[in-house]
Length: 221
Image 1 (cartoon, rainbow, N blue to C red):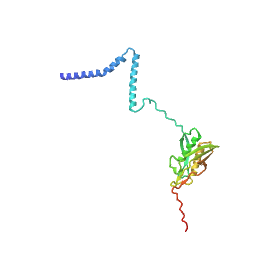
Image 2 (cartoon, rainbow, N blue to C red):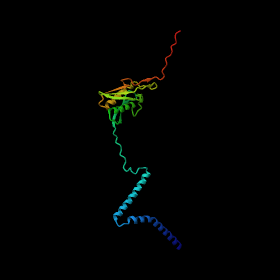
Image 3 (cartoon, rainbow, N blue to C red):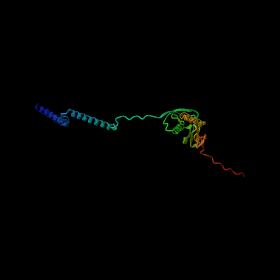
Image 4 (tube, helix red, strand yellow):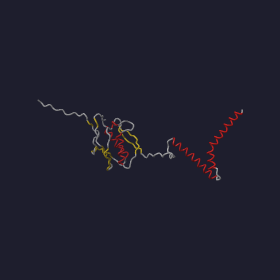
């Protein structure tokens, strides 16, 4: 019985020593900084200590989530200032015209806006593959306005003979482009499409890659 009591007494003393050892830093801090006669100074130190603990926790959280400590407020979403417009493009059959919506920044001038409209019509539908109805890239040389007319000058392009040109597709394209320009730029009353400066010239040109060389005529005996 005495042995058991001694062991129990020894262990309790060790535990008390460990508790005193662990608590001594906090007791020393309290006696040094918080155990003061002025309660206002004590409260100020308590708040400063609590704020330091909170800030330390916040920095650890930011470190673990890979976030900047200065990102206290979420970023303001960018306001979309683009306008919704109607664009007309050639259909799959090269004869029909499709009406689609586009979001576009009109720019600072009608010329910039016209360049974007032309690119939309040349690119075709956003929902169907209508490239065959407009078999050219549509590289614009210049666009200018005069007397209510919009002149669109495009570069000439050669279409190889392995690309099938849909009949009347060019006429449909011209109507779609004119309708797009006239609806979105009210000051324009007429649209003229030119190729290398020549107005109303045919755009779809076919290039025969395997041109036959003329045969030499055999002289008559």
